[in-house]
Length: 280
Ligand SMILES: [Cu+2]
Image (cartoon, rainbow, N blue to C red):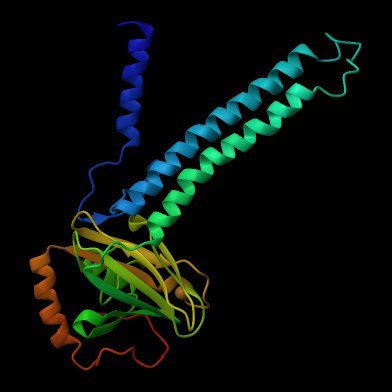
């Protein structure tokens, strides 16, 4: 095997290490993981693609600047070059070092804007999920099904008992069907929160008196976790998000059960209240 062949093998082996290990039903970041948590929606796949493109561009720029610095330091140090050049400008060079960065920025801006518009426009939605942030818990509403419930963080003991990751498990998780285009409406009743689901590429501010929106189409079943990531007060770390993506049949079954379980709710958000950590 030639040197390049060997390099290729090492590269392939590295790529295997960098690629995410097989994930269980709980979709969580792994210890010593490289890169992002595995993408579970088309939006997140597009974000990964742009991220990887930027990584190549920034690496090439960094190596180029490093090489220039090394060249200047070695070739033009005081010992080798005791009489400094009196050159003060060079029109061609100045034109190049202005135009090339502009072209690089354009090359970054075009895919970046494309991604922003892609994230912004919900394709024809199959269902709507309304998320309301409170100090310090979430309310979820399914306006198509006239269903609403609160979702509170679990105590450490309850997390351990349920086999959920500490401070990420909730009493009432969001359940959504795999493959459905879900329009997510996000708002708040007190301070600014943020509904952040890394695996879905969704991070939307929950602002009082305003409805922000995002969309997600989860491509595989699993349990996904997120958190409020806008500092919102005392219990900010205690308002996690737990999303179960299930098959359409399981979703229909859950919906029937949930309508009975949360029958006391008439589809409107409950009054603001202080959330304690729920022990179950
Ligand atoms: Cu919050």
